[in-house]
Figure 1 (cartoon, chains in turn yellow, orange):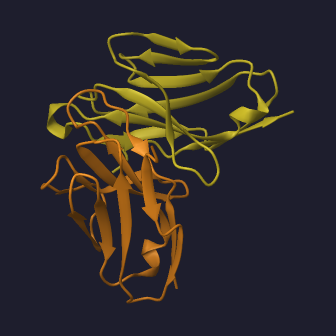
Figure 2 (tube, chains in turn brown, yellow):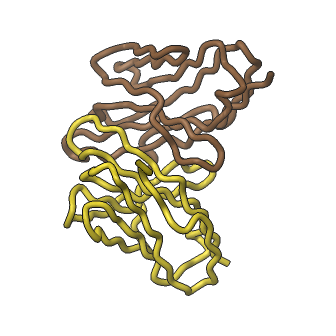
Length: 114
Length: 114
């Protein structure tokens, strides 16, 4: 039972372009939405995260946009660089009924062409 | 600090064999997790340990057992390996389940079951 749906599965962007990855969720009890970045052969690492009481969070070239009414959130990578080539996972943290556990999306493999 | 370490990095098993994946963290974290990563499926939680002395099932626990040996170590055991358990296994840790705590991942164990 996949509660977080991520798209696209793969994405190719030119250097300097904008990369956009989307996620949708069903459970309104989710209360924390992190994005993890994973390079080949490595474990995932936290990139940026947002709580549902804000609509946007920006850290450098990375921005999360959050739409609570639509139950959707997205990651925007501005001025994409070849070093951003990695797999990106969105996730959602359960609320009181599922405290602390993260449910991950399917992942998006991003390739930034020089 | 080494963070989260996992052994072995690679393993090939025959169907029916057993093995234990080891995980240790040196960050004094209370909570530890085992995930499996399969193409197109994202990261799925197998078992977790909210604190030393406790373990609980995640999304895909069948065929696995865990032991929280002490605060630092959390092992995953496959009693009778099956080809469906071919995957990349990640261990992670966090300060705790309560709150919006980052999960730190190990480098993974790539397991092939023939």
